[in-house]
Image 1 (cartoon, rainbow, N blue to C red):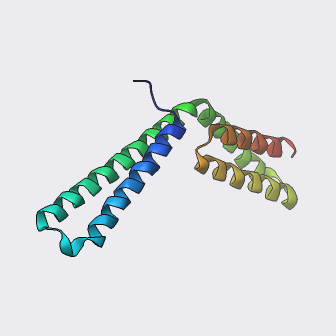
Image 2 (image 1 turned 120 degrees about the horizontal axis):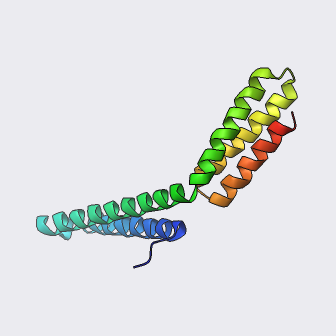
Length: 131
């Protein structure tokens, strides 16, 4: 089987999460008519679906990290440049501009989207070069 892309793994995680929630909702909606064994079976299945959702999320994170190996090195370089610039500049506007770009970089990293992250790295590097 081919490896999953980041988006495929995220989509599967979401689908399995929704299925887990649906099984849980069914169990609660029919709680009074279910036998203890049926309740336990549904609860176990709900937990298994939730675990599978978590597994797909972990795959998505792993794929993202693999895609970003080069970017991670670049982030290290840029953050070093940012630290140097912020500690040596005397212009508050430039420091604010650099800090703003770093906040954008952090937000981009949180998305897990390699293209967005790479663009934010370059925006941050540009903000430092402008100093």
